[in-house]
Image 1 (tube, rainbow, N blue to C red):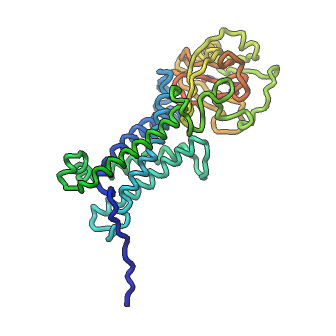
Image 2 (image 1 turned 90 degrees about the vertical axis):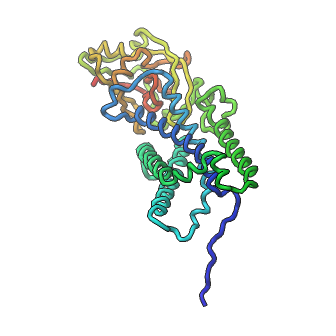
Image 3 (image 1 turned 180 degrees about the vertical axis):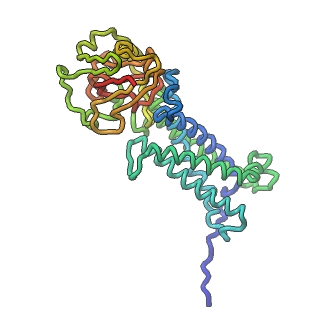
Length: 377
């Protein structure tokens, strides 16, 4: 006598194509915004060779906007992804698992899409708190996985296009005689999902959109919490930068006419002021008032040609951004400073004393702190 194990049966309401399509529209919108702003963020942080000299330095708030949208849309996608998975998970137990070539392609696209989506959004969320419980480098994997995610989503949409079209609107759904009694429950579910998206966005967006900072309850950074009125991602201790001896510190500028400046000599040069944001890849940003020497003036003194690129060397001993480069559009922008003061005060050690880079439309990790050498390339 054979013992037959009954397969799971799902008859719960709202696990239907109309509900999945409605939530899928919202999720797709969040993914598109997150992907496009993520590509911009990656290219600004790790520009491909053909683009390195042509990255725009304006608008000065550009990176703050795109990275803020990137993180906000990524966080908003989490409740949408969970709701989407809830509406479709019974199909994982369909039998037989493969019924045709089209069905096999559909299930393959779903498996790839779900795996990529879950890893992408949750690794991005952990990046906002700077926690990396994995052995690989976050940035290149996150960027590559984004293309896998979007490719899998496009494949899934192509396979499911007839069903998506059939359930896109209320009128089209009605022609398929979906249970009328599901209507109120579906509206309640969609209202709850929208409320969840609104709540997590409101409770985190204030880390970059400062008018909402009073509601910044869940974000790992608050724009007003930090030394000199600005948050700090990486302290001098974390970067293994020792206490700087002002009398011994020198700024070396290497170029056709190289020279060396003491801190007093640097302070004696003409000082400029600029109000620019620090915008970090983790999603927080805030504008601050900076003063210092224009990079373009230091380059001119070194005899640098107009199209020259610049290498910036930090005293940082620990970390991947001790040496950074900027194209001529950044180096020659009148707002790009070797900053010596922040919000009217001398830079604190954690903000890069004695000198740091501040430039418009540039990721925070490239606003190099503890600068001691500039090289004309």
